[in-house]
Length: 396
Image 1 (tube, rainbow, N blue to C red):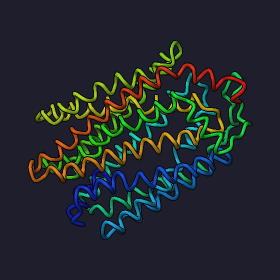
Image 2: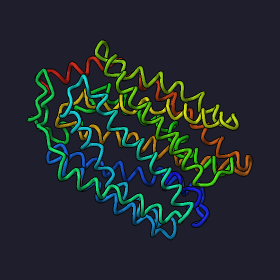
Image 3: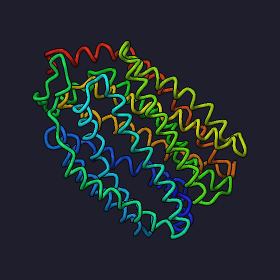
Image 4: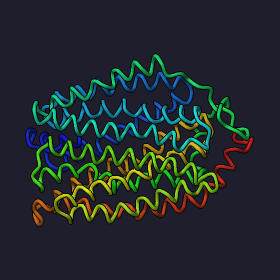
């Protein structure tokens, strides 16, 4: 959707606020709400079945997005994508936690998270090229096909592991929790709460940049969708792979001595993002793309460690619901609030700043990172206590 903002905006005569709703808040509200029942199902039944149904559903909904004729019809298709996409990550994180022991979990979640970077890379590159030659409607059809294949692969070949098989210290996977018990457990884990809100507030800042940088390059720098798709796809895809994988490996190594590194590394990485983002807008020529890459690289350092924290401090039968809760906070605050806020602020500032309103709106959203840093420190202060509580027999 990111690479298609400008052509959709032009053809359907939609405002930046409406595009911000479609790429952000309207999409993520549905995603966040749908994630909770999917997660509750995954904590009790086959996680591989949840994954395959989700992949098939969002594939069909993506292709139906090509039929959008106005804001309402396009929003309905986006709701379908959001509803089924919400079933993926909660089940996946729970599966990963039963495939890998805690000492390898961050790198495993990082490798899983590479799918996002690879998907963004392919989506921006292929979507931009298809849109430039055949229009944005054709791009939705082409990009909806791969998930259909993946749905079949997951259903046929991904096995369902024994819950809690990788745990030590009494955190058995056969202990079931009611919805109220699960909610109390999640609320009691301060590292989880701090990590979830850090995830959401940091994403406000990162999404405002990553979602709107392609539009900035098209609208302000004068590039076409094929050029921007190739540039943004390569920059965000490669930096996401490099940043996510390296921080996952580093977290597992450092956290053997102190689990607070799961929070400290994201803080360090995102602190570097802020100046790189400003330099992207202030530079020209090749320097623009260098700082684009560095900003995207720094923004890829926080998600995998924070999701790992959520899995480490919760028992096996609560992990899918915990992941869905983190995704709810991430999406409502970050993905939804960040993208929508940029569109709204850009429209409000346009009478005074003209085309420069988009850049100003993106930079205003750097304020979200300050809250994120506070949440990271709060979670770091509690993570050792929460890991010990999760290993105690009373929580098993």
